[in-house]
Amino acid sequence: MKIAIIGTGNLGKSIAKGLITNNAITSLYLTKRNLEDIQEFDGYKNVHLTTDNTEAVRQSDIIIFAVQPAHFEQILNYIKPELTEKHVLISTITGFLIPKIEAQVGADKFIIRAMPNTAIAVGKSMTCLCSNVQGAKRIKIAEAIFNRLGHSLSIPESQMQAATVVCASGVAFWMRLIRATTQAAIQLGFDAKEAQELAMYTSEGAASLLITNGNHPEEEIDRVTTPKGCTIEGLNEMEHKGLSSSLIQGMIASFNKISNIKEEQI
Ligand SMILES: NC(=O)C1=CN([C@@H]2O[C@H](COP(=O)(O)OP(=O)(O)OC[C@H]3O[C@@H](n4cnc5c(N)ncnc54)[C@H](O)[C@@H]3O)[C@@H](O)[C@H]2O)C=CC1
Ligand SMILES: O=C(O)[C@@H]1CCC=N1
Image (cartoon, rainbow, N blue to C red; front, top):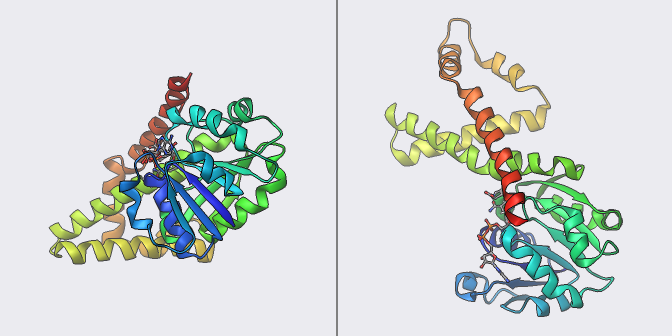
């Protein structure tokens, strides 16, 4: 696949790492206004670094946009003359709706929105996808890319804002939970490195149980909570202090912020 990433920042770099590590490219063009920050990709076979977005678009079939929302419209306008029927446009931009992309480049273009997360760098991204009517004809291409780099789910565009919070911001939320677990483990006597090891692999094991067994989390919790034991004591204390409530409220706040991001673009 001939892929271009327009805007190789935090997410763009993660996607690039995932694509390169998984041998998912025929050629990969990475663009950024200042190439110094992406020198780590220099020297990889078939990987090209450039400040020229039009060159990247001309040389590629699949164009992944990973710039901040405020820059997207201008970039679309700039590359529009280069777009042909071969191009599949994949936007990872938060809050930038398909009708607005169509207004810039035309509804006849294959337009897909993807909401991956930074775990794409290690082939573990949960990525939600949606498309315009034309893009539906190329959604299999996007599924092939993102399934190779993790797990994908096609959803209506109306759920994309929620998917951004749960999956994309979700990595940061989980990191904080893992970090808090690590801090507790240190207080309980492990050194910092061991504490993080325990936290990382325990959270991986918990998620793997659900993925492999398809069970509800409470079913797995019931297997751990020995009557009158230490687990239920800890769990109940966490809930008294508002663990679930705090997570839910934080995610709703994050969701509401995306509406503001959309308004800031207008
Ligand atoms: N960071 C994340 O985990 C996720 C981010 N997103 C979305 O991805 C987009 C990028 O987010 P981040 O990577 O966090 O931002 P970022 O600021 O790290 O990356 C954006 C990059 O675009 C580059 N850029 C700006 N104008 C450019 C131009 N004209 N040509 C080429 N490159 C240009 C910037 O130099 C920067 O490196 C945002 O729209 C965000 O909502 C979506 C899912 C996850
Ligand atoms: O924080 C943000 O706005 C972007 C979207 C999801 C992850 N990073």
